[in-house]
Length: 127
Image (tube, rainbow, N blue to C red; front, side, top):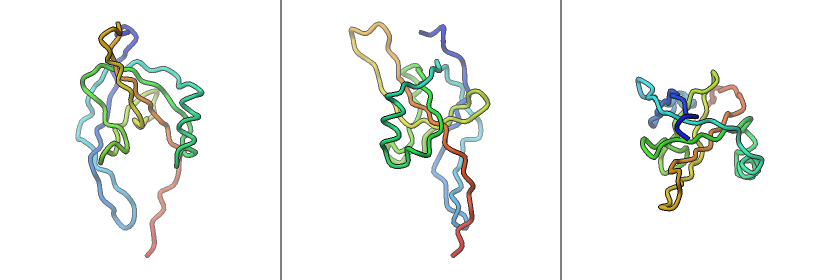
């Protein structure tokens, strides 16, 4: 599967803060490069995501296959904001992962689910 992977920039997100009612995320200074194989998401992926709270805000999904190391951070896992993968001129948020690491499996990898959120305007919250 390695021959189908391509080096893609990944932006690590750290906790941010609210400034005048608007969330301001903090990013790592330099993106890291991770080799990922990108494929379209399945209809089943869309059904699972859209049934979750906030799932209707997703405009597009992708599957990404990567090595066991380094592991990408998934949004909502613990206290994580999730990493951003830059692909096809857009930023895709990592929203899920599945580790395939069986002794009998020929291919050992992590499958990630990447989401493109619907564009929205960040309005200032007036108090």
